[in-house]
Every structure is written in structure tokens, then in C-alpha cells.
Image (tube, rainbow, N blue to C red; front, side, top):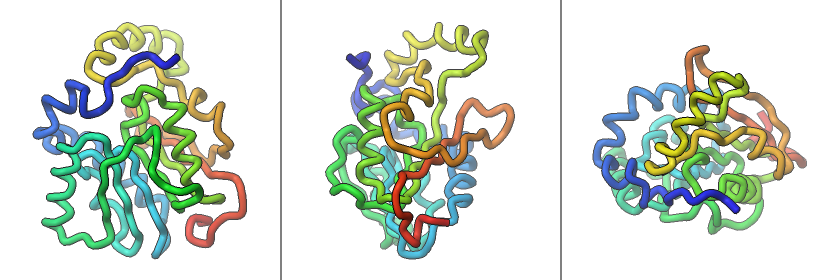
Length: 217
């Protein structure tokens, strides 16, 4: 049974700081997200699902010639994201309330499925991962940026001590990447950090099967 972790809209870090989210995290997270999305070389007319879109921090990084669907469980975050979409006049982006652990999309719907700093927030990360794989087309890409438990024992033991505190805020520090990969049919394409000092790991994986022309590059 998964440990109880608040849904994003129930988490203190979201409910109390959502109005300051972009100001706090734009300089910390956005450069990494922008680089990762750029390196995907998303083809024109590709379909992209961003799971846990939040306030839309990543939306400006996507090419305007693809179609992006962003879902989040927190209405207050989505309201801010929608205002951003309206202000920028982005017609290639649609937003909707949605549960990362129970995606309301048919199997094999998207060429790319992305999620940034979300998988350690949901109560059941494995279930979220299975859903992301389910809605991804064969040959498509799953892209995750997140903090994962260090493979260095000393670092892991130190960070593990913070877990009881971070769980009260809404996320866990003990999630291993292997936990996500062990129960889904994925081929790990690349695992890396954008800098040696980064606390966050980028995971790019491929769903087995005949690759769509758009997501094959």
C-alpha cells in the first residue's frame, strides 16, 4: 500500500504558495525544463501530454507547431496556467483538470508524455507511470524530470531523514527511478543530469513498438 501523500491541491506547498509558484521556481526549474524539451526535437503536428502542468511553467518551452494538452488536479494552479495561455494567445495548448493516476485519455493517444517534478508528489507513483505509458503511442517518448533517491548510500541516508518533513509538505524524497521502471514496458533511452551539481535527474524512455514518424527522432 502506498504511503499517504496529499494530492497536489491538498499539499501545503501548493495551497499556500501557489500564488508565488512561478516567482519561486521559474529561475530554478525552467532553464532545465526548457533545455530538456528543446533536446527532444519535437516534430511538427506531434501530440504532447504534460502531466501535472501546474501554473504552466513549462508551456512556453514547447514548439508552437505541436499540440500540447496539460492536465493538473489543482484548479487554482490551472487557473493561473489558463491566464498565461490566454495572455500569450497560445492556440496549440489545451488545459483540463485531470488526475495523473487516472488519465482520462484513450490508449496510445500521445507522441510524447512529459512530467516535471510531479511523480514524487502523487500518492501512487507507479500507478501514474503506468497511466503515462498507457496513453503514450508505441515508439513514443516518456520524459520525466524529478528528484530520485541517490544511489550513494551516504547521501541517501541524509536525505532520507528529511522524508517525514517533506511528506507533510506533499512530496517524498525516497522515490527510486527503478521503482518507476520495474512495472512498465519501457526502454530507457537516456538518464542524465543537466549539471553535475543538480539534485534532479532527467529520464527519457521509449514505449516499445513501431515508432510513429513524429516521435521516432
